[in-house]
Amino acid sequence: MAEQPHVLVRDLVKTYRVHEREAGAGASFRSLFKRKYKEVEAVKGVSFQLMPGEVVGFLGPNGAGKTTTLKMLSGLLYPTSGEARVLGFEPWKREAAYLRQLSYVLGNRSQLAWDIPAMDSYLVNQAIYEIPEKQFRETLDELVALLDLEKLLKKPVRGLSLGERMKCELAASLLHRPQVLFLDEPTLGVDVTMQNRIRQFVAEHNRRYNATVLLTSHYMADVTALCKRVIVIHHGKLLYDGDLAALSEKFAPFKQVRLDLQDMASAERAKEFGEVHSQEGTKVTLRLPREKTSSVVARLLAELPVIDLTVEDPAIEEVIDQVFQGVEA
Amino acid sequence: MKYWINIYRAHLKIGTAIMFQYRFAVLIWAVWGFVGPLLGLAVWSAASSSHGGNITGPQGATFTDRDFAAYFLVFMIVSHLTMSWDAFEFAFRVRDGNLSPRLLKPIHPIHGDLATNLAFKFVTSTMLLPIWALLFYFLKPSLPPPNWTQLLAIPAILIALVLRYIWQYSLALIAFWTTRVEAINQFYFTLDGFLAGRIAPLALLPGWLGVVATYSPFRSMGYFPVELILGRVPSDQILSGFLFQVFWLVVGVGVFRLMWAGGIKQYSAVGA
Image (cartoon, rainbow over the protein chains, first blue to last red):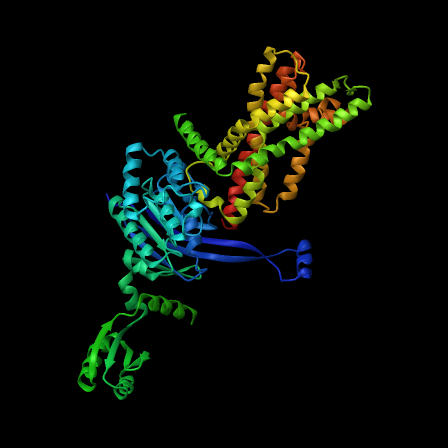
């Protein structure tokens, strides 16, 4: 029998009705008697599916509809229309059997009790999710080791730094070994070392439990480190769903050639070989169409005094930027 | 059943831990509960003195100084055991979005909140016990001799606790529709204070007001258990007192369920 998708989304739409008024006391008074509402379409017919064990990046600029989609999939929002099944459940029915297998980490919201150590909140989760003592201890030991939590568990949560709190939040979300994990900006505001830790940890959780992960992040490093596949959404519409590597080919059909040249005159001449992306003294970065890259590189090496030359794909941030600019245009 | 025992035990533990983190603030809140009843006692004692030592209600119920002392002291304890403040907390959570992490758990948020409420009562009652004892010693209330009907106050207080809790939680759910619920809360608390007997024993309320108070749910939330302890409920009215409590409890649960179902839809329609 063919494997069923863990997440199935079909033509999902969410429209908010928002109260709107001009600034000022007059407008405020008028709105008492006559209210104006505006319909805001946050998600406009999005469809995709995730197979068990997939880790997928969910990308889009602010206001693209990422969080609204995740909230519908986790049962926090009712859709305006469309269909979604997660682990076979309709999320917005919020059945306990579904919520037991799900975790949704909201980077800006806390599930931990603020005034007491995180360990106390973990014990409440143990009771709520009915985690057997042996499994609880095993998972906790794993989490403590992977996230270096030992010293944090006894401190009141309000005394933790943002990064420390985020680690404790993640641990709280994973104690019950969820089958589906929605991560909304899990590395928001944490330093580079901590970001790496969290990435390793998510990868490890996915590997151990074959959990399906849908991740949004403004840090492309999170996406490149964890996701082979990305879904790109903009203005509520799906723009791309596929391989992360293929995203570059589709939306940025060029390569970047970094050149370190012997003198400024050569640097000036290099500009004749392609579009200049950036220049810093004798270091020039050119953008070349993919199909012409090898021939132009051969000419550069033959005609200019090159000290060093590297050919690379554009940074994923630039590709994404390219995608969104293309849509705006 | 074991599941729920574990859930409440875990919540009670962290609820108690949080209370101990803020023990002085908690104690001040608890002591604040003295103010209303002691003020009521002072006013009614003065009124009683100026009426020749006692006051008689329209139905013939009589209260002397020491009866008022007994009433307001017992009311103070019952009121402490049945109090609830969730209407305010809930509105904050809806407004700042902190309800969302709670909705992601496979358990209704009311259980955690109720356990926290119970933890508050456990911690503060332990702190207040000596103060209550001192007040009883100095104010010399006139309490009836112990009898079996007073034992019925235990289930009456338990029902009153759940009843007041579910009604206040239902009121809190208005925050799903309008996040500025303070005025509604204030109105409700004023009604609660007046019709549950915080300002005066209901037996002293005049005519129609006494009738309204008798049939309102607020009587079942506090006044009825107080009357049972003070031996002021005629034996043929005890059963009807409990039936009123159960009736209002069933109504409260029904209203709560309807409001929750509608409120969650509303919350998730506008953006959780």
